[in-house]
Figure 1 (cartoon, rainbow, N blue to C red):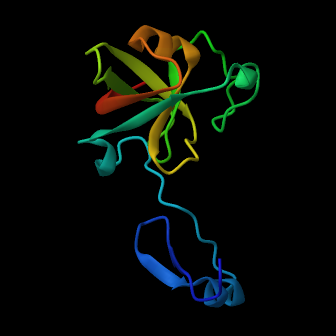
Figure 2 (figure 1 turned 120 degrees about the horizontal axis):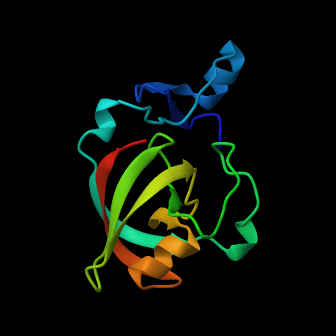
Length: 138
């Protein structure tokens, strides 16, 4: 980022430019929802889902858990860890509930990364158009 790029605080409020923030010693973080956060209350979005590579199995997730390809888990950029999300494959109507335990996807056009087990239950491998709906928090 260049010195003139705008940043946002964790509250979502626009912050100073990066150069000014660094000079002032401010810590800037992307907005991340927390358990019980109002932003979680009405989640409903559509976009592309991808599948974690099997190479991730056995590695630590952002939440500190070990990723297991056989579990119904997923990565989301902002939802709190432990949030349960109903994911529906728009091509075939299948749906599953997954628990958020990691951060991602890191490709802008995708909205969720699913474990191989969740993708299999939804009937796809690779990419699929999905709809997300909040299902609860564990």
